[in-house]
Image (cartoon, rainbow, N blue to C red; front, side):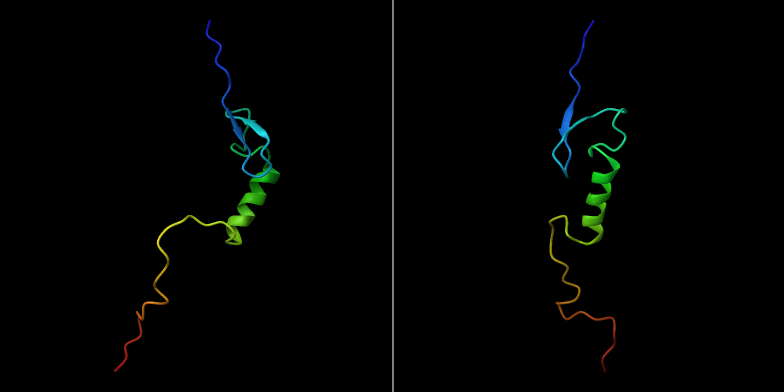
Length: 67
């Protein structure tokens, strides 16, 4: 009989250990509260995925036609 150790991850908000399985429905978060705090940070644009800067407003491009 093989008994595997459960995979543990740290909650991104509070750093509490979370078992990565169906018994942790909010994984990788430890709770709905931590999940919602994280969601709020993304919604408030406190978090962002690194990438090329958005140049659409600063490169002189416009949809308006100038004659």
